[in-house]
Image (cartoon, rainbow, N blue to C red; front, side, top):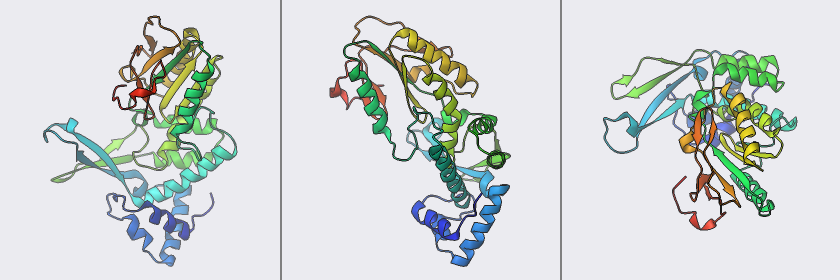
Length: 324
């Protein structure tokens, strides 16, 4: 890989702002204030890490428990925030940008995926959904929204290497990422100090710039397989998946394809947070099923998809509702 320039490190650190530092306490502000000479040396060290990453700045995180409200003695009232080393995140940000450039330049992404991609945002998928339903011209359309349970926390690390290889990444890149995810540990910050180190062997890392692209890479074969189902349209923004089908039969084929491919990658649907409706059709509809999970018919209810309330009547008057 190309070397990392000291000037590039400074720009990343300046743009990152006041993000909380990791275990060492080295902040982005401290990095940005270093002399050009020292930034060049850090760039040289980072370039070596790209070839064989073994330093603790890539492998160790600490977790701060943020109280959300309620009783302080209930663990469910806390939200864990993983804090990684700022130097490590600069390195993985460089890697993420280079990998994203490769994916975009070589047109490797599934057409369904809009999440965390340049010049794409949630409005693209919402527009596609509304346009597809509008073109149905009073013909029934089956619309299913899938929620993946703890999506980023669930993927096995071996699937990352497998997916990178399937997309044609070179072995040096695959080896680097595999090493980054080897022997990772975290510690929880408590009033009495840090806990013992806890080994993490599953999922992509919270708050790491590499995580969104690695998750999308693992999900990519699932989306591409679903796109092969005739009569179906797939929309994805990272793990927020919407399926539009011309009939129940087509929808069930899409869901079966999803089940086959996603189960291999330990991506499991949360049925209670998923749902479907049918436009231009007033009949009762039994639940759909995938991975043994029941996908409920939404009837008159709306589903909150990428911040927008969507329902079978395409009624825009319920945007303030909190259901779905």
